[in-house]
Length: 397
Image (tube, rainbow, N blue to C red; front, top):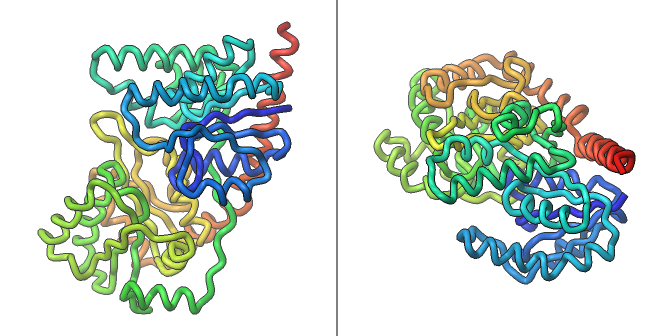
């Protein structure tokens, strides 16, 4: 069973929810049966050579292109790879995103009469449903509907994601849910952890709240800061560490100055993987109180919650988007209204002051991630789904 994965963005680096999701699936499939078609990335040579499967890249370095540039990149894909793919006798195309890769899979599927599977995450669907009218909005809605309805299969990452499909003319029952997973927790020594404490000025007695993510409005770092300000009087040893970069950084710095928190909140910026593992080990609670924005932007799942759970940490997340699949309320963490600093503060206070509760949630979260939410199980479910699609396609001929 030959599978070709079309995706606009692929590692390196290994970051971003949808990118990590696809990579974890692909890395656990039979490598001889997989080819990945994507765009160029800095540092790709060493990464590509280390993979057991083939990666074909365009000559264009991927970045946040404008609309016309994206059309040009898709045209380059078609000219560079369509003939090669046909010679490969690929059985099933996989579109890693709905708009760019989905459009290409639909075109190639019609040309060759090949079935394709499209992956959806939630935020792209919800943003489209909330988008205001205009030529581009109407065109994109039409493309979404056409790509979804013509697909032989649809993979969604959460119940929330699947619930949005009927608005595009596709029953949720046509899709399969395969939730994101995380790989093994990086091993860090006690010496590494202590060195990280020293670098960030975190004492052993400090109660550390950690958040990791791009600094953007929907991730909720602003309300997390406000909630942290509310609990400091009751928990004076509480510290907040914010990892990530993004356009909201100036606003967050201004908020810290306004609240007089510049010295007790750490804006760590980008943190590489091994050091990030140390911060996960150091923290007492992980929190990302995201919310849905007016334009529909929200969290499709929240893989970072699983990363924290893998380290045995209780998690706090916003009650929006697909996070209910990532956090089991009162089992692996606590769900809150990301717009309510009161709810966020109450959840943080409960976990920082009740060690038995924090331990119970953290330990169950760790078992769930390491035993149930493994990349190999996700890949096995995907292979079974692909086999059913091809069997149905064969019987329909």
